[in-house]
Image (cartoon, rainbow, N blue to C red; front, side, top):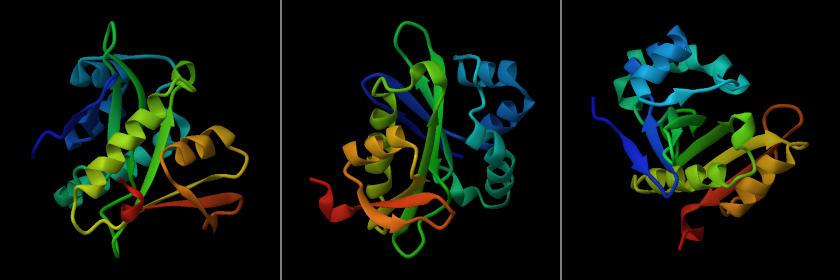
Length: 175
């Protein structure tokens, strides 16, 4: 399996391999060793805590999903520190990929989320068949909505889950 890494100004995004996801499930110490980064309080974020076993199972059964599930976000300033997780809910379907993300407490509202999401957008759009990226967030989550809008997403109506809103970024909107 390849090692997918994306380097941005402040972050290194590391695609969740079977080995990394197993280390994550074993605990913070195992994940820290696997990533070569500190894993602080607040890990795992709630949405990832609920999804990681399912994502591991899906990746074990379908290795082609590598890169289309979770990416670990490591801050590389001063010392390497795991600050978030984000990625896609699976391979693109009918030209559409769904993105999600979570940043742990002390690293929120510092620009790291939009930096990572932009990198994941570029990665996804580098795949020829991806025509749009969608995201759903709760209507009350103003920080998430701002992040999506900052990254070029546009409101597209109600989401599938009660209380969520859907945002879309189309390939042609990217410079």
